Amino acid sequence: MGVASEMTGTMNTQVDKLDDYFHQGEENKRVHKMNDSLLNLLKINFSIPDSGQRVVLDSAMIDSVKQFRKYIWRDAKVVYNTINSEKNYLQLNRGAKYGISDNMAVLNSDGAVVGQVVNVSPNFSEVMSLLHVQSSVSAALKKTGDAGKLEWDGKDPRFVQLKGISKSVEVKVGDTVVTSRYSYNFPPDKFIGRIAGVSSDPATGFYLLKVKTAVNFGSIQQVFVVENLQREEQEQLEKDTEKKVEQQKKGK
Amino acid sequence: MNDLIKNIFRLFIFIVVQVYVLDKLPPLHRFVIPYIYFLFILWLPFSLSRFGLLLIAFVTGLILDYFKQTPGLHAAACVLIAYARPFIISVLTPKDSTEFNYREPSPRAMGWAPYSVYVLILTLLHHTYLTLLEWLQFGTFLDFIIKVLSTTAISLLLIFTVELLFPRKLKFRTNTA
Image (cartoon, rainbow over all chains, first blue to last red; front, side, top):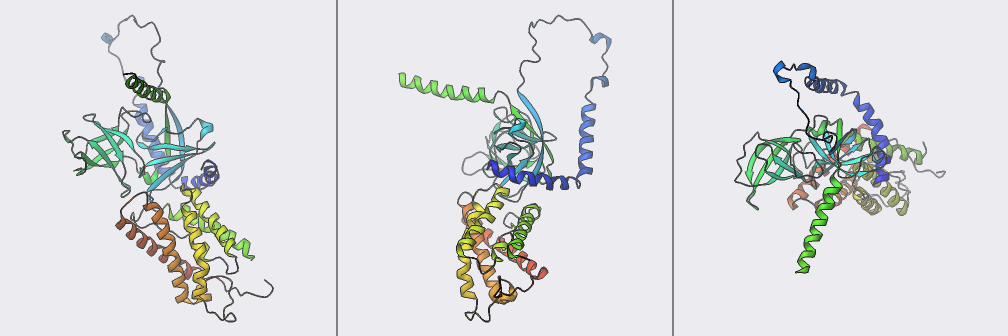
C-alpha cells in the first residue's frame, strides 16, 4: 500500500489545501490560545524573591540535562481522514523522508491521543486512528494510575471503550483517562478523554468504561508524530528476557 | 463525445464524489454508509465484452481501495457485480433487438421498471458482498443484515436522485459506431 498512498496522497494534499480555507478562523484561534498558554510559562513572568537566591555547588559531575532524550516530536498535517467506517485511517503529509516510521504515536495539536502510525511511504504516512476496531492502546486512569486497554467497538465515533480496569478501583463519570506509563509507543500522561459511562463487563468481571474522546475526530487538522527513541532497546530487552528465561527452563 | 473519454471523465467524477464528499460526510449512523461510485459500472456501455467489464470494474474498485486503505475489498465487490451484470441485462431487456438499440443502461433505454430492478439487484449484490467481507472480521449477524439493507436503501436513494437530476442524453447504437 506504500505506492498507493503516494498516489492518493498527492491528490489528498491538493483537496486538503482547499479545505484549509474553511477552517482558518478556528485554527487561528486555537494557535493563539496555545501561544497564550506558552507565553504564560515564560520565565519573565515570574520574579524570584531575594531569599530564594543562594549559591549551591552542583554535585553532579556530568551534564545530566541533555542525557536522556526519550521522545522526539515532529509536526504533520492531516490530508485525509474518515470517521464513518469501522476501520478509520488518517493520512499525513509526512513520510519516511521526514523520519517517520511505523508504531510512532500521533497526538493532536493540543497533545491528545489520535492514533498510531501503521504504514509509511516516502512522502506520506497512514495512521490507524483510535476509531479503528483493531486499534488497541494502553491507557490508564489519571487519578489512580490503574492501566487498561483502550479499544473501539465500531459503533459511535464519539466514544471509545476502556477495558481491563479491576472493580476494586473506584471510578466515577468524568474521571480523566490518559496514556499509561507502560506503552512503548505513547509518551505517558497524554490526555485521551473523560469517562462518560461506567458498566461492568459480564464476560470478564472487569469494568467496561465508556470514554468520551478528547479529540474531535471529525475535524483534526494539525498533529504531532511522536517517536520513542528508546523503543528498540525496550523491545530488544523484552525479547532477550523471554529467550533467557526459556533457556533457563530448558537447562533445569 | 467519445465513449472512452466520457467514461474516464465519469470515473473521475464518481471517485471524487465518493472519496471527498460521501466519505467525508458527518456519520449519519453506523449502519448507513452512502455509496454511489459503483453506478459507474452500472452505466458502462452494453457493447463491452465480459473481460473488459471485469477489468474496468477491478480498476474502479482498486482506485477506491487505494483511497480508503482497504486493499481488494471494493475491487472484489466491483468485479462481482461486473460479472453478474450481463446476465441481469439479458434477462431484463427485450429480446427483439430492433426495439432495443441504446448504448448503455438507463431508465429510458430499459424502461423505469426493468432499470430499477437492474439497479436494485446489483446494488444489493455489491453491498452484501462488501459487508460480508467486512463482517467476517467483525460484528454480529444482525448487524450484517441491517447494514446491508440500510446501506442499499441509501444507495438506491442516491442513484435515483442522480438519475432524475442528470438525465443522460439518448445515445443510439448506429452502424458507424
